[in-house]
Amino acid sequence: MPGGQAHAHEGDGGGSQSNHRRSRSPPPPALPVEVVPAFPPPESEDEESWVWSQIKAEARRDADAEPALASFLYATVLSHPSLPRSLSFHLANKLCSSTLLSTLLYDLFLASFTAHPSLRAAVVADLLAARSRDPACVGFSQCLLNFKGFLAIQAHRVSHVLWAQQRRPLALALQSRVADVFAVDIHPAASIGKGILLDHATGVVIGETAVVGDSVSILHHVTLGGTGKAVGDRHPKIGDGVLIGAGATILGNVKIGAGAKIGAGSVVLIDVPARNTAVGNPARLIGRRRGEAERDEDMPGESMDHTSFIGQWSDYII
Image 1 (cartoon, helix red, strand yellow):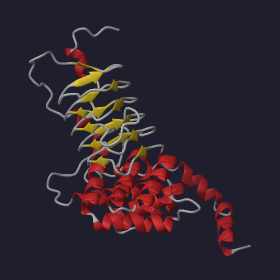
Image 2 (tube, rainbow, N blue to C red; image 1 turned 90 degrees about the vertical axis):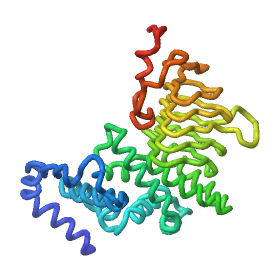
Image 3 (cartoon, one colour; image 1 turned 90 degrees about the horizontal axis):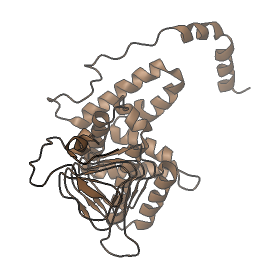
């Protein structure tokens, strides 16, 4: 019997009593807030280093609490000296196939993150966005390891770089793998800002000439598509701080102004002014009376408030 198998067998048999005792011991205490706080302290000057330190602290805590994940957490997080290397390793293993090798993808991702500091800044901004906006996100490491919307966006950023470098067959191949693995289909030519949250992410489709600004939140089954067989600039332009609800469809070269809100299930075919709400099929503007001053201070894409307009909607009927 190979040495590694014998060692594993001895651990399963001889240590059964100690394993039984271990399974009944209380879980380790949660790290104090000063070790894994929810948000970076204001005095933090290097967000990437700060976020990476939080990810490692969370990974060590989780490896101690759940031995079944210890090898995974060590290989994916704790064995790496930096966030770009950890992310590159994780993406490569997620997206590889029998003919698209993980070693090739790792080198590709790492080269892109190393050569383009703006990509690394966007990674950190996306992690902070998920942690602050999604109540189901209990830590930065959870987002890095398990949130497919986050991973799909980071892979897209690399495919976008490849597209700009005229390495378009590889960019399209990467797009295809992201669609297969994460069920998120973003054309490599689409321009995506930073601080993006793809919440749940399944079924998100973003077309070739679409533009998405900063601090935008998009829920599952959202389509930013064209109207048919039109060519050229034919996809939506999404301003900063926009919130797009689940199942919304925005078609054509229309502009969604900064801070606008698109209700779940809406079909939008015309421009939506900044700080307005559009709902319905076809969508209509609601939520503010003509000439009414802007009331909201927070951008919907950051506050994730899907229903604040209802109190101002006088003809709302169930």
